[in-house]
Length: 371
Image (cartoon, rainbow, N blue to C red; front, side, top):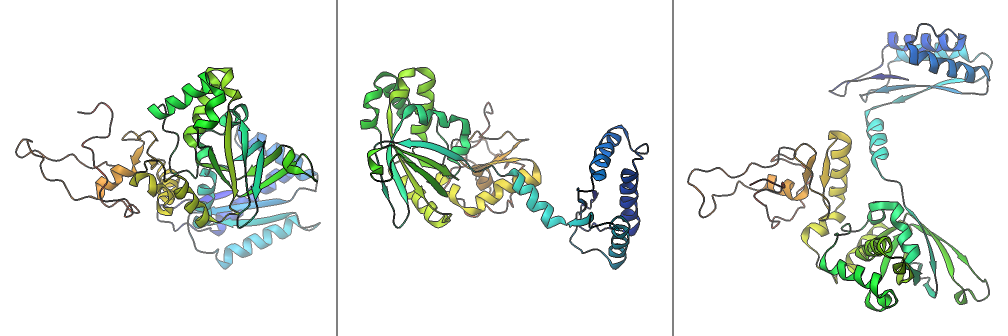
């Protein structure tokens, strides 16, 4: 692999560099690794062993922080170089990676992997149209097992679990002290998924037996507090695993609009703030990825997420404040005093935060321990 960097995005391949690329491949092919550094010698030896098998296809990658295609001269050097290695077959090829492709790969690497959930429902029923869904009762022990997925389990939710709020404490108390009553007191959990694989206990009368579901691309969009409470309670008392929880799986088939509408509709019974609602805004999702991939910073949107420190990034509230007009001096403040400066990571021209509600309160300081 050969890479060319340009901060202006104008990097391009040149004939000399390509000649060097083939010179290195020639050394590896002939087993002459002495010219490489110690680590390179180890890798060259491994590559030589693979090449010797003659079943290995070699792809030389040229990564360019630019967008221009290779010049005719560079293409001719590549063609001639590959011809020397391919006299006995098509073994050596090449691939150009330009800036847009590199950027897309970086963002892809930053994305979390889709969650696959296992669930056993009994009793249960299903609805086949317009969207396939399954609803039934799960044992608390199996719900508690979802802890392995962490907060990725709530990726499509408008917020992560809010921690030990008074309501959540009541959930945990019921689970640990009266697990048999939990099903009666709780509204249950809604899970959206891209697809589902059911295994029925009987083909003739499936509803008489438990159904085992494997939900791909799954996310808890309602009942995050319930799931987190079950997990916490199970860690405190074994009896909590005996609780029963109503769970509904809805198969969206990748229908993003329907998924967003379902997420909003199933959360109407709770107090939802403007900040919660904008987590579904595609612009915010792009900003999260761009902050992470381009700047190496954190951009927090969900209300329950920890606020990043100054050198780590900023929150959506800080970004909104950075775009707001400079506030006038508050009543009782000293004459001539200056308002607090906006967060340095966002700047007054922070792009993409135009959808943040202007009514969002701008705290004097969002940093713990600041006066």
